[in-house]
Amino acid sequence: MRIVLLGAPGSGKGTQAKLLVEKYKIPQMSTGDLLRAEVSANTELGKRAKASMDGGQLVSDEVVLGMIQTRLSKPDAKNGFILDGFPRNIPQAQSLDAMLARLGQPLQLALLVDVDTDVLMKRLTGRRTCGSCGAIYNVHFSPSKTGNKCEKCGGALTHRSDDNEQTVGNRLNVYQQQTAPLVNYYKAQGKLRTVRGVGAVNVIFKNVTDIIESQIRPLADVMGKIESAAARQAAKAKAAEAKAAAAAKAAKLAAAAAKIKPKVKPAPPAAKVKPVAKKVVAKKASPKTKPKKAVKAKPKKVK
Ligand SMILES: [Zn+2]
Image (cartoon, rainbow, N blue to C red; front, top):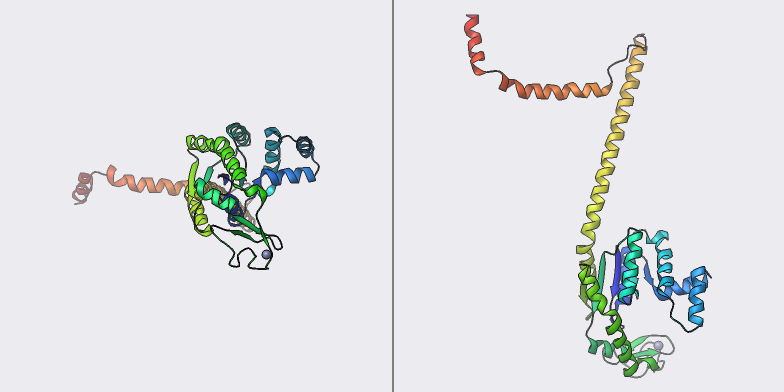
């Protein structure tokens, strides 16, 4: 399955992506991870990406697409992928479509994890992290029972500076302007499905997998049936071939046993099949061709 995940910062799509990776055993491709991997492997793309980042520039779409294409060629991506964090805008989506079309692996589904903006604000601004163990709380949805201290280790809870309302508001605005139009882009292709990203993680994931099972699985099943039918056909042909070979061998042995010269070959097995078919046709045809009068007439002649 080939899926793009869409959703605002704080929508929880990253969590859903991880659960999908576990369930369907397909890799999640996030641009951040791909960048780090290419840079640390010091590949050509990695060098170009590093040069951009060192110069304080964004990594070009071309480089990102190259990294995705490289990643797609790895064996674990054979059965599909989940793209998270790319594409972020319409031109990237168009380039991605073009690349996947060249590879003959078009996207099957664009899954939007939809969460209202006020909930996103609370999720992102209410986040508190334990400085000692890294546990995450939220003052609005999942506060620590011990106030400003971590429930697990008693460490102090900190509020990241970029989790303030203004910064979060800016991030959400950028998303609204650049990424939200992708919803219409994929809707126009008939590939968009939406899941509400509010409530328990496992309930959201159930809805996500229901969408996948109903959208992608039937397609995969049809393809699987076509493939297995072809395999059955091939197996049948092979079995018939083996049977014919065995029959020929047996006939040869029988001929040798009867001390008949091998020149007198028994009829090939294909010929054995044909008369059977002819007999069936003949039986079917006989009642029609024989008029009832003729049947009645026969006894008279005998008398
Ligand atoms: Zn802690």
